[in-house]
Length: 87
Image (cartoon, rainbow, N blue to C red; front, side, top):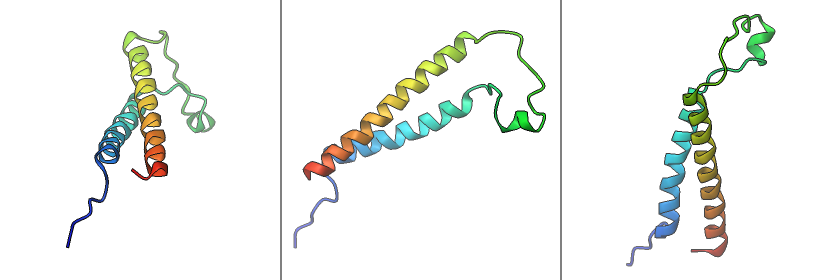
């Protein structure tokens, strides 16, 4: 009886990167400051406004979120291609 691996190493590697990217993407989205205009404004939660513009930390968080989102999307497309090819 021979054991057949469940996934090849490229699929396993991309799957691990996808899980890590998913966690980082969720964390980076949750770290963003609320910008208003959503459901909270409808019920009176948008009364306070910030007097300053966007900070350097917020801009860096925006760049990090975009980068992690692109990595996440590339992992999805990579796994799709690998499963289509049957590797």
